[in-house]
Amino acid sequence: MKISVVKNILEANQRLAEENRQRFSAERVLVINLMSSPGAGKTSLLERTIRALKDEFRVGVVEGDIQSTYDAERISQTGAPVVQINTGGACHLDSNMIQAALKGLDIANLDLLFIENVGNLVCPAEFNLGEDFKTMILSVAEGDDKPLKYPLMFHESRVLLVNKIDLLPFCDCNPDLMEERALKINPGLILFRISCRTGEGLDRWTDWLKEQIRLRQRLPLPPRE
Image (cartoon, rainbow, N blue to C red):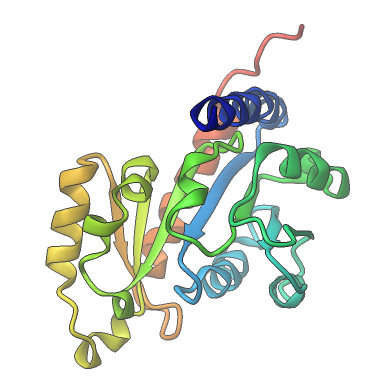
């Protein structure tokens, strides 16, 4: 019975995710589902990324948290439109939550939409939201063993950002080993080493995003139903 219930939940979520994807595609907006454990640096990355892109592209954010509007308030200081989702205890965002949140965003006037998922290395990987890419942030302070412990997150992600590299002298972490383990799970993973505190490596990340936005804008529109 439990397996059947879980299957039904995931299938229902997938149907709504496809609806979201069709809407995003029709508006030519690139959508990134940003995932990590708590404290890895998702919001800091968004602040840096939005400021680097905002003179050229229109960026919006759906901010997911169990409680509070603290991160959404931080994002609003960048000038980007932001909608808050409080899950009230749920450990991930789902497609239905995203559909509701989109009522508060004018996605027709966005080039890039970030969905900052709830901090968790397990549940968010299982729920498709209609995004173009799942992107994961892993800080060096978390250790190089995380690909071994949470393989699904690495398997489902298109991009891995290894954050807080400025702390490497103070951490028992081998970033080469971390990346090697991640690539064994997902050989197609795109890797960036960054520091949201110092800005190191962020230009490579934002250059990649610019390329993806331009590619999205050149894709043909889906047929009208």
